[in-house]
Image (tube, rainbow, N blue to C red):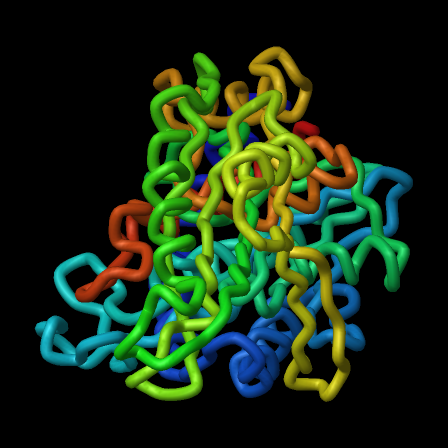
Length: 396
């Protein structure tokens, strides 16, 4: 692609900076926690139609899919439209749902995580239409759902039910305008301990499940000392994130206890290896180890689910998806990008982790503001992201 085309793309992204910021503001003003995204999806659909997309549709799970072109190869740009809730409103210095545009930022919940990415992708679509995009590429902009509740579920539905398997995907999760190529996997494990209750005045007659769980929890903590590490992704980790118990009364020995484990998986670890580690620790107790299953109703009314095992993924820095991103970045911004990884989990666990689709991340906003109070995204980041997505479609 010639340098003047890159310049033209960036000029248009800059020209439409207010358009992008105002579209994002409209999306932020619509509260959209997981399973309650209907209204924000209607607004995103309207924005795609206004931008001139060739086709815009909503699938059975509620994902909005905008299409430009009808080429043989498919490039999808993904961004989830659900957000976490606000948390303690007292920690915010502004209204989380104001969508105010102030001092070069768009303010509010979801500005970074991650309505900013889809807003920029809509503008990229408008730019492509204005430039008469005619490559043998189908561009799909996907506003996905339920990611905060179950990362990757939306793409499981797209691949398995909609039979959509792109050749390349860009995730618009926040990267601070770096290019990301992987992150650790994760899984949610529960360990259930069965004891024997008796009167609390004579605890020796029973078998206290809480004591079993407590001893196991301390051994699970020690796993962190020897879990494997990867030069790029870092170390595997495990933590007890919840403990529950039950007994016939508060004057009785507990006959049930449960640990909930947050397990982060580095390269080379698997579902089976992580479960085996916990089973080895609790083998002396009457305990069961289980990987949780997620199944909830989308806002469309469809009930859909998957196991809460989200594979580790990374793609090589020499992969065409990554090198294309580097070339686009250098041509647009005249410097070499930082190529890195996310600390948290994304839809990449399904897109690449399960299905092996080449995937990079490039998104507006700093990930440290994800799920945090006073979330805000620079308008300049939205401009850069709009230009990057449009240029990538031309070059890939």
